[in-house]
Length: 143
Image (cartoon, rainbow, N blue to C red; front, top):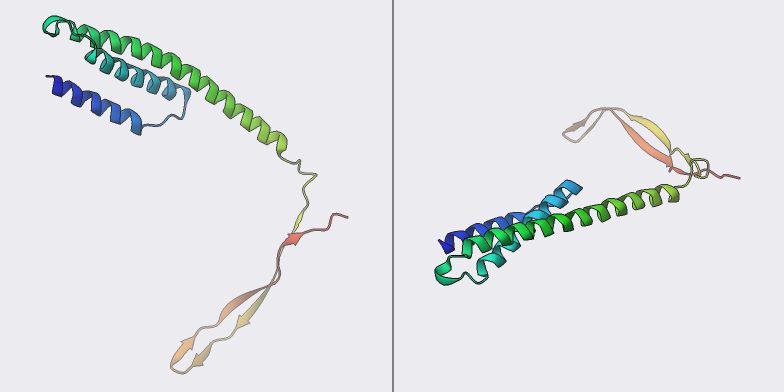
């Protein structure tokens, strides 16, 4: 019975560690899951009383308390992540130069040449276009 519970705890723990948080809801859920798992594990190793009569109660209480603590922690962490994400976005928007300040790019000059069909030894090469970059793209002079 204990081996089965330990396998379940290990399985749930491994599933928690391979998931990721992308939203506050996932962060809160993951925090609750980790807290409940940790609380249940601590409840399982707490004093079970005579003949293990309090073990189930300890696991349930530990899971409940750990889950609540994990939910609160996940909520706080989610809020901080959202705040940091918004601050980073605003900082990036302020740092971006306005379109009037950026220099313009002059397009590359490309020459097109037609190469007629020809025979080289026992090979036949069909006629085709070749493109030559005469001048690469570059910044326009602003002044």
